[in-house]
View 1 (cartoon, rainbow, N blue to C red):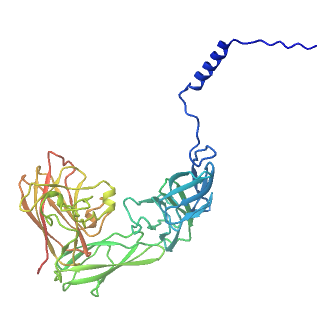
View 2: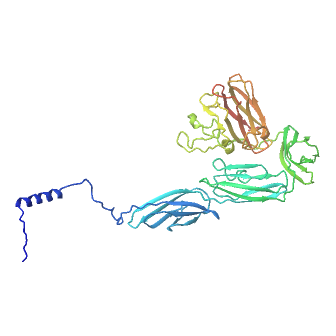
View 3: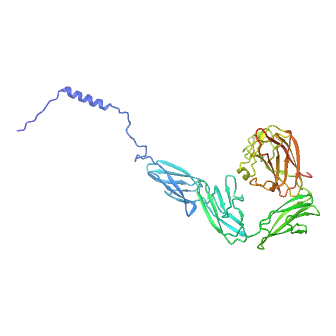
Length: 465
């Protein structure tokens, strides 16, 4: 016989149980239940990253490697107008430079992630040609931020894209070796993301050569010639009028005015000869056009001193005060790179609108003129100096890249000395040997805010105009 034990619960116990369950169903713990983003069935937020490296065998080629989570599609924008949908492309740029690259990925749930960076593909290379001991380097590099040539003989030269162009002589230089070598010439290029790449080539089979060069000074019909040649043991001057000389530094008087092709031929100890010809203006040559002040002039704009943004200023504003575009730029990147700054503009003036003020050692005035070779021009200007120290004007015959030999690169040097702190007009003449003459003003080395120099009303007078 089986007995069942049945225990009856009082009705009050069931009532308490239902009340407890009711309270539990109303309890809020303060947290919402997790719900994946719409369309994200995996609950994974995608993340996209990638790395870049230059291909060692071709520095114009960039290796891209993606590290994306849950990516089912890729879109690369290489910054040059081209794209790719590969996960890990290798891409070759047509030209070196700095490019903004972006990778966009889409996850399996349709969510988008983006990463971006900059790359600096670069092509580095050069060839060269040799004439005796003079080597002309042809730089075929593309995408250089800066570069250095090491000629292998203890000499080097550098170039920077921030201050120069590929037309600068430092980009594809010419170098004269003083011995026959052999030498190893190395071109080191830094791309736009800071990577250095070098190429080295052997320079051999040089023939030690003479390098003819000379300067001259014209005084009416008489010209004094000064030899500046290298490795020369003999000289032959052809003055262009049928006369010659074998002197080291001859003086020659011409019969009539004119421009003469003067040729100096030098010979070295090995019997190798080379020649150099320069145009030498003699006497007073009649101008055919008036000289032109290139790139604006100090008094060429009106209304406000800030409008005076011409070639006197290293970094002129991009627009004039009236909002119109400024056509003016600083004409010499080499001097700018050395920290030479333009003289400031001041509202103090003599007869012109504004004067240039030199208040620091690095201040300069730099202005090119279009002229004719052999014509005698007159420069006039007003100057006031707060001390009697020298204020020097160089009429340069080329756009020098430094100040190591301003006088040697000038057709005339004029010095203002002993000014009594009052505006005084000064005039001087010069005869250009090139078609561009550069007015270059340099204050004394101790110039500062308490000993300033003022320059105003600079004019160039062309005879007959």
